[in-house]
Length: 148
Image (tube, rainbow, N blue to C red; front, side):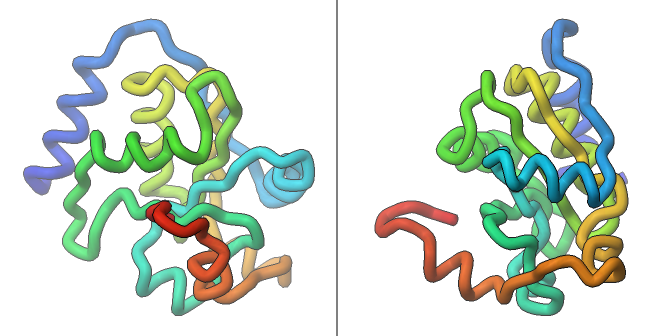
């Protein structure tokens, strides 16, 4: 286990016991929730965003870098700009594996009350032919002074 992954696991274990349940969702539910305005946090790397594109409206906030390292506290600060703990939030990655850790972090450590994990990630979204936009579109739409 990588040191950063171990540190994230320890952080999750040390978190308070009271937390919301993480809800696993499919692409149909992702599309429905996105239409209602629930923020989507895409935790993949910049290279992955460029390679595939993103779900329209996604906020691009990498959790794990290319080497699998994570700075959970810095990531949580960025997420809190997009959604407060009392607001629902959706997390997506390539296949749904990294978002399991991200969802647990939001739920257990940060106290988010409603966390949706896209269980098959952007791969399944793309395979279904659902709408995608280039990552550059999201970065261009990022407000001045914000880190998106």
